[in-house]
Length: 309
Image (cartoon, rainbow, N blue to C red):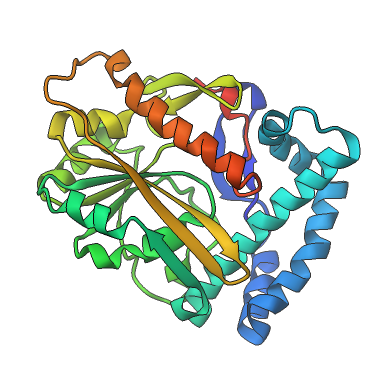
């Protein structure tokens, strides 16, 4: 299925950013968007998703890591139905991302809750760290950040040869944000510090471990401890930059909601131990857990994140 992320050995609990699906399969969906818009691409999604849910053991296994913890009492047909809904929502998000790039951002309505809070936090002059996750369509969130009036940098790992296009690639536009590669020197820490010292915006994924496997804390998530990175909060502690949690969800056939908040401010004099960051990582995870309770089929981590680190 286009966009369903592959995974390495489950025992390692690691993930790959490479999408499953050939260039031709992706191209068919992109062509449908150009010819018939969002609805035409959605129509093809249903049989494609049904095939993967019924015939692909790999797709079911990848979905099961999350679904078995989100719905531990679901078995058999109910689990199959959950898998179908999760893959379908993922497919719609990927189509929507292509729609934004191919047909333009006006094709989707986006509402941002917490706009004034973000502007006030950025106005403090220490930069702003946005911690988001693989929920809803984070690319829509990135496309909606122009109102901040500051350059945006994104800590992001992308594998060479991935055929799944970002929204700006569909439009033939340059990347609207600077990409910081976590595989770079010191995991990109020096570049991230420069962004914050310049009073700019840094966006970090808070639900996947990128860079060093040592920079994590295990925090309860959906009934079981899972490793979550603390690099964003470590940066906030050293720079005193405010941290905002930013999550998106699909709220209608052609609409999304971005929810910004809470704003976290790490106090002066915070200790240097990793454990000193635990309360802030826990706050993020609690927000993420509440999100999965409200939008259970819009959490898109298709690997065993609980087994990691």
